[in-house]
Length: 187
Ligand code: CTP
Ligand code: MG
Image (cartoon, rainbow, N blue to C red; front, top):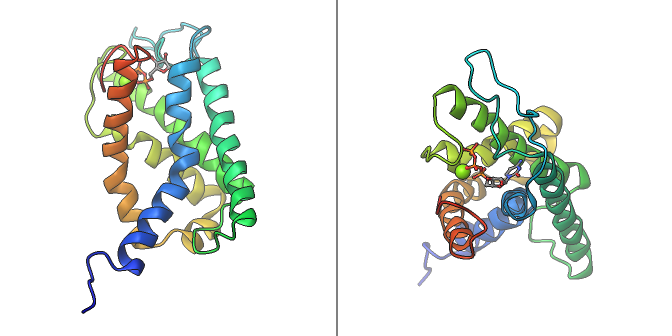
């Protein structure tokens, strides 16, 4: 008897595809947390409302090292797809990988901009926005700069898995980051 719930087409492949697509977008955040520090992206300046533009939680070093890490893992994935004949997975390209990595941290910065506007301090909890900023940023850049790749490679089931997996992984990684004292708060 066919088991639809764990069928390859609707479960395993979309699940693996979701992780495969999002690795270059997932890596920049934890790498920024480990490598961040130094000059803030807003250079310490305030917005017209008297609050910081982005805050001390967004630094140039975190942004640059984080994006490089996302692009780096993406290049390894592109190589691995060829070396190990992973043709059943979405076909990553250098452009897609750059948009995923840059979009993830740009989404994070845009979120911090609005977080400050709503008066939430650095590190404060902001449910939903904290978890989906990277997805919104990555997909926005893909829609603008490489929509052919986006609609050609990301299936609806894979996209649904991205929406399910992202908050779970986000929470898990932040608890680990808090436990090993990389992050000040477990969210
Ligand atoms: N980080 C960084 N540069 C970035 C993004 C993150 O240096 N572009 C580092 C900062 O040390 C930050 C940590 O990673 O404190 C965790 O990131 P995040 O949770 O996104 O920042 P918060 O400190 O929570 O700040 P915010 O309230 O603005 O989200
Ligand atoms: Mg935070």
